Figure 1 (spheres, rainbow, N blue to C red):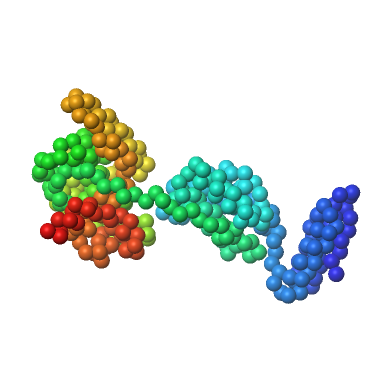
Figure 2 (cartoon, rainbow, N blue to C red):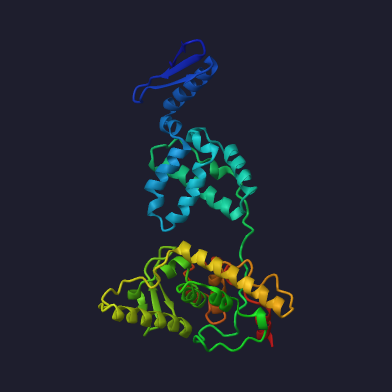
Length: 376
């Protein structure tokens, strides 16, 4: 039988002792709550389904997020991006509460608050991290009694899929640098050419051309090593990618020209410094991923301003869509759509690194006029 005793004027302590189980005790403000809790614990022990709730009741969400970041997140490829999500989750009021007290209604309220200021895809990423924290606590941190309140909450439907195509020169994929035909659409062509011209970075232009020619991710490009570049075979090897699999990426003639120019400049710099070029594991681009994004955003903004000024000088109305809403990841979309006109789906997945063709379709956005040409 459980023991219920009064402690002070406004507290009741319930104790449950049963052979084979550690003694359990908890304090409540009313005798009824103490009796209900003791009855539940004793019933679970009798049925052999009792598990300790003490750790889940003593660990706050903030503490769980911090432990998750140290033990789980740091080993992930996207640790830097997830660190930002964890930082935001630590700042919410719910982080002060013990894990055991957080219910699905709390998560639903948090979801609705986030949706007021963030896109559904952002909210989905945050909810996914929270869900994983609860699952890890339950499966690996000895909190078997803990339920995952995120699993019971309706997830927002992402509506921010990108379909942005880039207005570029009429040169097909594989055209060597400098051999592009002159545009037939005037200012409406050559978004990337204008961005490259407006960039003040020496690394950004080759990164842009390599991205739009190969469909490689930003992180894959900046982590590329010279030892994995084979210009004779026109292939670069990616030993570690976002989905965990290695892959070989074929290089177009334009991509080869970009890398060859970088390699020649590297060798000339080593010769000028009287150094032996023995360090074959040097990174091709010594720049961080976030720096690439910032440089690209600045170049796009400058290119847009120059374009608007050119239109004013020519007394033309600027196109509101030209050089606006352009992101670096759009280069991967553009490259995939261009490569899809050359390779069948099963070969394209090997180039882009998509395991699921359905995910690949999110990156493939053919122009209607290009499809119409196939019908003639």
